[in-house]
Length: 440
Image (cartoon, one colour):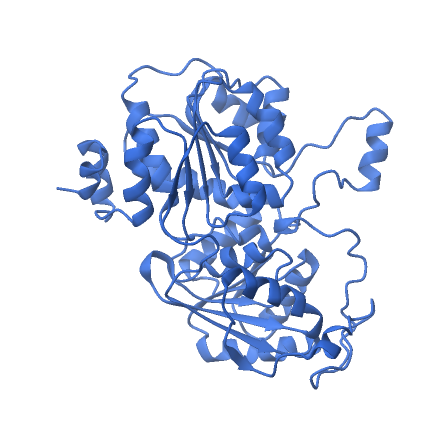
């Protein structure tokens, strides 16, 4: 007997899981599924790659199938909010796999693609809607969907939604949902704002935690190279030359930096692609598909890919730039060592990134092992790079890269933070042309 049946999941769904090679629940699934089936709100905390989607998705499908009737036009029975398009697609694909040939209507609405086909799909009613907040608000404003019949609200990777400023969107969406609903909140980290989120939107939730918040997967080997900013490119190429046949993810802080690095790697003979906020959704989907198939061996990305990439074969994650938000480090390196496999996470730390590294180590409660260079001294840390370049530290040459033109800090994923619309768009709104559609 499939072990999911012992958790309360129907034999028919368990059979579909077996057909897809899923027979043993993960710890978060064992803890969360029985509680969710009772109707309790849940705050679930678990590392990336441990099966959180099935933890909330299986009991939702189990309960919704029992209703036995079609949803009314433009209504939604279960709403799942995700911070990025990639994560939304991953969730949607998994839910469809879980139900096999079941009758539930599972739709996805995200920005970056035409809204009209999404409106048409919603006309027929939806059992489970997976959405990014920006596009969902667009559809609500156009009265293409109503949430008054929703029995479930799921916030997946809720900490990143907070990082990206989606709390404002959530405040718009939540009042449109019925008060009598089940709310499930899942994440890998637990920043302070998450406690406030739980207090506001969850009703006496059961906390399910299978690892300390912010803890990385046990099978990830971590290391850090202390290196001048100007020398990062040469070191990355040197290290990646040793495993050209393995899939590798490289994270950069900015969209411009990711694209520039991808072109450099491509010129050096690596089968490289990129995904970031300046790429169209079709391009992002195509690059992910090519990476998953092995046509691309290297994917250079901003934090838009830190969640939502579930590719078991990723052997290496490089933090070419350290993230500004320490929790993002956990999600980045969680793209390797998926589903019990082993993986390696390699970080580069320039003198002006010591603050970020210290925040990461403080959160993880470890000192990341040194693979190269030496830890920067306080006097070296204080020499922040001028706008024009990286300076001559640690044997490197000035590279002229700097951070020219970055302006305000970007939110996770490389998108402008909430309220930071470009001046040109704000001027258009003043002239009465209306707000730009959210592209999440």
